[in-house]
Length: 235
Ligand code: GRF
Image (cartoon, rainbow, N blue to C red; front, top):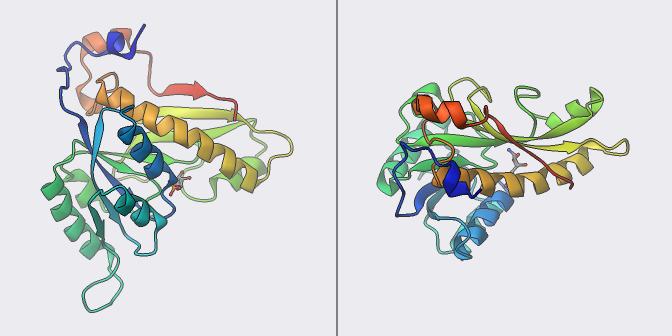
């Protein structure tokens, strides 16, 4: 069975690539995976722009090297660090100009306001380094080890006003090894993320996963497995 066989009947066949905007704050290794897959023609996407809330994020360099438009929204013209309201005003205008079908938060480390999320021009998804609903928030690897978890991983969920609480679309799982530390888990979970993110975006681009989770048809609900889709990987 191919991905196309799973497509929701209500979903129009997309002829143009899925337009994606990516919000980042740091290294941008997940952004790089998307850039590489796009350039290799492996994902039917166009990254229409990248927004960073930090001017020193390596993700900015990655986007520039790939000739992707970048908006760095870290400081005001007078040099003052931008508050979240100011950031959101500029980010909204930028997103309206880029017209994405999907907004991906990939290592974006600021909490967005309910107003920004509710008025977003496209569905926003976030990559979270834990198996939600467990371990919302920060220090997820350390907390999973301390709790003696046998399984850990990462989740991609729809962004809602409540932090890390929107519909979970997909998860990547791994076994926690007895020797794992917080650092080793972080490295292993990142490897999972680099597989989970393009896989999830492929499912969204192909219409297997709905861009609007509130609009899944009754027919699709009858044959789709319950969300989240899970990938169990050896990493
Ligand atoms: C990822 O591990 C993600 O789970 C977390 O931030 C990290 C971003 O990594 N939210 P990168 O910037 O994509 O390399």
